[in-house]
Length: 216
Image (cartoon, rainbow, N blue to C red; front, side, top):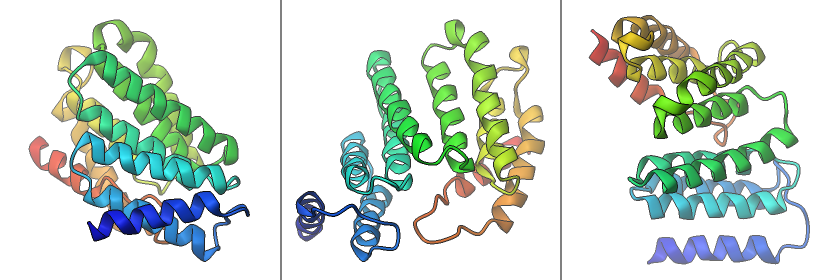
Protein backbone atom coordinates (compact mmCIF):
# COMPACT_ATOMS: atom_id res chain seq x y z
CA UNK A 1 0.00 0.00 0.00
CA UNK A 2 2.81 2.41 0.92
CA UNK A 3 4.56 1.62 -2.38
CA UNK A 4 1.41 2.41 -4.36
CA UNK A 5 0.89 5.68 -2.50
CA UNK A 6 4.50 6.69 -3.19
CA UNK A 7 4.13 5.94 -6.90
CA UNK A 8 0.86 7.87 -7.09
CA UNK A 9 2.47 10.87 -5.40
CA UNK A 10 5.33 10.83 -7.91
CA UNK A 11 2.93 10.57 -10.86
CA UNK A 12 0.67 13.36 -9.60
CA UNK A 13 3.69 15.58 -8.98
CA UNK A 14 4.89 15.00 -12.53
CA UNK A 15 1.51 15.82 -14.02
CA UNK A 16 1.14 18.99 -11.98
CA UNK A 17 4.65 20.26 -12.70
CA UNK A 18 4.50 23.03 -15.25
CA UNK A 19 8.15 22.89 -16.27
CA UNK A 20 9.82 20.38 -18.56
CA UNK A 21 11.85 17.81 -16.64
CA UNK A 22 15.56 17.51 -17.44
CA UNK A 23 18.05 14.66 -17.03
CA UNK A 24 19.86 16.32 -14.12
CA UNK A 25 16.65 17.53 -12.48
CA UNK A 26 16.12 15.76 -9.13
CA UNK A 27 12.41 15.47 -9.99
CA UNK A 28 13.27 13.62 -13.21
CA UNK A 29 15.73 11.33 -11.46
CA UNK A 30 13.26 10.59 -8.67
CA UNK A 31 10.46 9.83 -11.12
CA UNK A 32 12.71 7.54 -13.17
CA UNK A 33 13.92 5.75 -10.06
CA UNK A 34 10.32 5.18 -9.05
CA UNK A 35 9.53 3.76 -12.49
CA UNK A 36 12.59 1.51 -12.44
CA UNK A 37 11.57 0.22 -9.01
CA UNK A 38 8.12 -0.59 -10.36
CA UNK A 39 9.75 -2.38 -13.27
CA UNK A 40 12.17 -4.39 -11.13
CA UNK A 41 9.34 -5.52 -8.86
CA UNK A 42 6.90 -6.32 -11.69
CA UNK A 43 5.68 -9.89 -12.01
CA UNK A 44 2.47 -9.76 -14.04
CA UNK A 45 1.51 -8.16 -17.32
CA UNK A 46 -0.52 -5.61 -15.41
CA UNK A 47 2.57 -4.68 -13.40
CA UNK A 48 4.59 -4.10 -16.57
CA UNK A 49 1.80 -2.04 -18.09
CA UNK A 50 1.67 0.13 -14.97
CA UNK A 51 5.42 0.70 -15.20
CA UNK A 52 5.14 1.46 -18.92
CA UNK A 53 2.38 3.99 -18.28
CA UNK A 54 4.48 5.72 -15.61
CA UNK A 55 7.47 5.99 -17.93
CA UNK A 56 5.28 7.33 -20.72
CA UNK A 57 3.89 9.99 -18.39
CA UNK A 58 7.44 11.00 -17.48
CA UNK A 59 8.25 11.20 -21.18
CA UNK A 60 5.44 13.67 -21.81
CA UNK A 61 7.12 16.04 -19.32
CA UNK A 62 10.78 15.25 -20.03
CA UNK A 63 10.38 16.20 -23.64
CA UNK A 64 14.07 16.06 -24.53
CA UNK A 65 14.89 12.81 -22.68
CA UNK A 66 14.79 9.46 -24.52
CA UNK A 67 15.05 7.13 -21.51
CA UNK A 68 11.40 7.38 -20.35
CA UNK A 69 10.07 6.32 -23.76
CA UNK A 70 12.77 3.64 -24.02
CA UNK A 71 11.68 2.03 -20.75
CA UNK A 72 7.99 2.50 -21.56
CA UNK A 73 8.67 0.59 -24.78
CA UNK A 74 10.70 -2.14 -23.07
CA UNK A 75 7.95 -2.68 -20.49
CA UNK A 76 5.44 -3.18 -23.31
CA UNK A 77 7.77 -5.73 -24.91
CA UNK A 78 8.01 -7.68 -21.64
CA UNK A 79 4.24 -7.45 -21.25
CA UNK A 80 3.84 -9.14 -24.64
CA UNK A 81 5.64 -12.22 -23.27
CA UNK A 82 2.98 -12.55 -20.57
CA UNK A 83 0.15 -12.74 -23.11
CA UNK A 84 -1.24 -15.81 -24.84
CA UNK A 85 -3.50 -14.28 -27.47
CA UNK A 86 -1.64 -13.40 -30.68
CA UNK A 87 -3.71 -10.28 -31.33
CA UNK A 88 -2.97 -9.01 -27.83
CA UNK A 89 0.74 -9.76 -28.29
CA UNK A 90 0.75 -7.82 -31.53
CA UNK A 91 -1.05 -4.89 -29.93
CA UNK A 92 1.46 -4.72 -27.08
CA UNK A 93 4.40 -4.94 -29.48
CA UNK A 94 2.86 -2.28 -31.73
CA UNK A 95 2.64 0.00 -28.69
CA UNK A 96 6.24 -0.90 -27.85
CA UNK A 97 7.31 0.11 -31.38
CA UNK A 98 5.36 3.38 -31.12
CA UNK A 99 7.14 4.28 -27.88
CA UNK A 100 10.53 3.22 -29.24
CA UNK A 101 9.99 5.55 -32.20
CA UNK A 102 9.49 8.45 -29.77
CA UNK A 103 12.77 7.62 -28.05
CA UNK A 104 14.53 7.36 -31.42
CA UNK A 105 13.15 10.73 -32.53
CA UNK A 106 14.78 12.31 -29.48
CA UNK A 107 18.10 10.50 -29.83
CA UNK A 108 18.57 8.88 -33.27
CA UNK A 109 22.20 7.90 -32.54
CA UNK A 110 21.70 5.83 -29.40
CA UNK A 111 22.83 2.19 -29.55
CA UNK A 112 20.40 1.07 -26.83
CA UNK A 113 17.43 2.34 -28.81
CA UNK A 114 18.40 0.44 -31.95
CA UNK A 115 19.00 -2.72 -29.92
CA UNK A 116 15.48 -2.41 -28.54
CA UNK A 117 14.13 -1.65 -32.02
CA UNK A 118 15.61 -4.89 -33.36
CA UNK A 119 14.32 -6.80 -30.35
CA UNK A 120 10.77 -5.61 -30.96
CA UNK A 121 10.96 -6.74 -34.60
CA UNK A 122 12.15 -10.19 -33.58
CA UNK A 123 9.33 -10.45 -31.04
CA UNK A 124 6.84 -9.53 -33.76
CA UNK A 125 8.20 -12.40 -35.86
CA UNK A 126 7.73 -14.86 -32.99
CA UNK A 127 4.00 -14.10 -32.90
CA UNK A 128 3.55 -15.44 -36.45
CA UNK A 129 6.93 -16.87 -37.51
CA UNK A 130 5.87 -18.66 -40.68
CA UNK A 131 4.49 -15.52 -42.31
CA UNK A 132 6.89 -12.95 -40.87
CA UNK A 133 10.30 -14.61 -40.76
CA UNK A 134 11.37 -13.95 -44.34
CA UNK A 135 10.72 -10.22 -44.33
CA UNK A 136 11.14 -9.41 -40.64
CA UNK A 137 14.42 -11.08 -39.74
CA UNK A 138 16.64 -8.98 -42.02
CA UNK A 139 15.10 -5.74 -40.77
CA UNK A 140 15.62 -6.79 -37.14
CA UNK A 141 19.24 -7.78 -37.81
CA UNK A 142 19.88 -4.48 -39.57
CA UNK A 143 18.77 -2.56 -36.47
CA UNK A 144 21.02 -4.69 -34.26
CA UNK A 145 23.97 -4.13 -36.57
CA UNK A 146 23.31 -0.39 -36.29
CA UNK A 147 23.29 -0.77 -32.50
CA UNK A 148 26.69 -2.49 -32.69
CA UNK A 149 28.11 0.24 -34.91
CA UNK A 150 26.89 3.02 -32.62
CA UNK A 151 28.45 1.32 -29.59
CA UNK A 152 30.55 -1.80 -30.20
CA UNK A 153 30.79 -2.39 -26.44
CA UNK A 154 27.03 -2.58 -25.90
CA UNK A 155 26.29 -6.25 -25.05
CA UNK A 156 22.55 -6.12 -25.72
CA UNK A 157 22.54 -6.37 -29.55
CA UNK A 158 24.80 -9.44 -29.28
CA UNK A 159 22.55 -11.00 -26.65
CA UNK A 160 19.42 -10.36 -28.73
CA UNK A 161 21.01 -11.85 -31.84
CA UNK A 162 22.18 -14.89 -29.87
CA UNK A 163 18.77 -15.37 -28.30
CA UNK A 164 17.15 -15.26 -31.71
CA UNK A 165 19.56 -17.89 -33.04
CA UNK A 166 18.92 -20.03 -29.95
CA UNK A 167 15.17 -20.14 -30.62
CA UNK A 168 15.44 -20.41 -34.42
CA UNK A 169 15.27 -24.04 -35.66
CA UNK A 170 18.39 -25.51 -37.23
CA UNK A 171 16.60 -25.91 -40.55
CA UNK A 172 16.29 -22.10 -40.70
CA UNK A 173 19.90 -21.42 -39.78
CA UNK A 174 19.62 -21.29 -36.01
CA UNK A 175 20.18 -23.61 -33.09
CA UNK A 176 22.41 -23.85 -30.03
CA UNK A 177 25.62 -24.35 -31.99
CA UNK A 178 25.05 -21.13 -33.89
CA UNK A 179 23.97 -19.24 -30.77
CA UNK A 180 26.79 -20.33 -28.44
CA UNK A 181 29.66 -18.21 -29.82
CA UNK A 182 27.40 -15.15 -29.95
CA UNK A 183 26.30 -15.71 -26.34
CA UNK A 184 29.95 -16.09 -25.40
CA UNK A 185 30.85 -12.80 -27.06
CA UNK A 186 27.90 -11.13 -25.35
CA UNK A 187 28.98 -12.56 -21.98
CA UNK A 188 32.41 -10.98 -22.35
CA UNK A 189 30.86 -7.65 -23.22
CA UNK A 190 28.46 -7.89 -20.26
CA UNK A 191 31.42 -8.44 -17.91
CA UNK A 192 33.15 -5.32 -19.20
CA UNK A 193 30.07 -3.13 -19.63
CA UNK A 194 29.59 -0.16 -17.30
CA UNK A 195 26.41 1.92 -17.69
CA UNK A 196 26.99 5.67 -17.71
CA UNK A 197 24.68 6.15 -14.73
CA UNK A 198 22.10 4.31 -12.67
CA UNK A 199 19.26 5.16 -15.06
CA UNK A 200 20.85 3.70 -18.18
CA UNK A 201 19.83 0.25 -19.54
CA UNK A 202 21.65 -2.61 -17.83
CA UNK A 203 19.59 -5.71 -18.56
CA UNK A 204 20.21 -9.05 -20.25
CA UNK A 205 23.27 -10.44 -18.46
CA UNK A 206 21.51 -13.09 -16.38
CA UNK A 207 19.39 -14.29 -19.29
CA UNK A 208 22.42 -14.40 -21.56
CA UNK A 209 24.36 -16.54 -19.07
CA UNK A 210 21.41 -18.88 -18.53
CA UNK A 211 20.96 -19.53 -22.25
CA UNK A 212 24.71 -19.88 -22.74
CA UNK A 213 24.70 -22.64 -20.11
CA UNK A 214 21.99 -24.45 -22.06
CA UNK A 215 24.19 -24.40 -25.16
CA UNK A 216 27.01 -26.32 -23.46
